[in-house]
Image 1 (cartoon, rainbow, N blue to C red):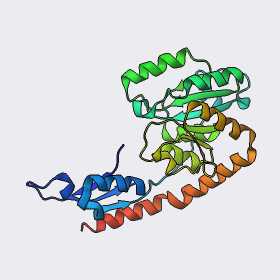
Image 2: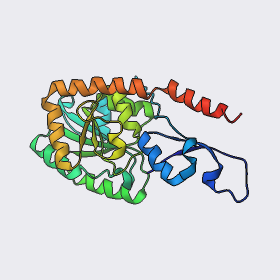
Image 3: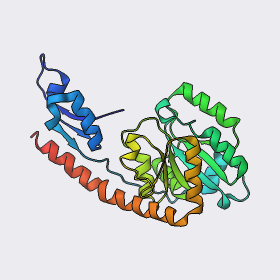
Image 4: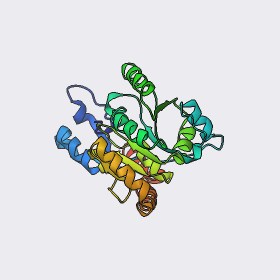
Length: 257
């Protein structure tokens, strides 16, 4: 897990360790700050907490039907599909295959539920594995990487955005989904639990089977869906604004002048 963003190093050289030369560092959450303090010890006073700032922008030149068709989803009734979008780079820590088997079983019971995985192909070996699994698995598809604006457009059209990571610092995709008014279903790990409050701003799950259970709740309980969407957007607006993030970094930079 990436604990810190090292903002600036002192120009001093010599026998000083990297930790001693840090002028300041920024952690996304209080929990990450606590973990970082164990590493930096006496440098804890130099660690500041600033949540990640989020900005979403949806392109107007986006065709949902074309996006699904190019991803391999063939259906005459596209509008009736419930598309779950797993936004992640293809690397081990994101665990993109974690939900594939159970989701395929669920799809066979209800073909309207489909899973689309989208993100950059970072790990070549894992990418080959994911492509092979998706090719032989019903109801699961792999989309080509898109621009940020196109990705946000796809997120806005999907039924829910997923996270299945083994570890996270702070998932931008989760926050972007909240900002776009899309429900989030996230694996219950510390990084996700720091920003997703179960049943208030999103839903957490700790196993593939629990993922299906929480998804079914999201399908049947319209009040729950409306609540997590409303509160998720309010949470991002209150805690993850770009303006506040810029002001924090500007204030820290000013201390160096």
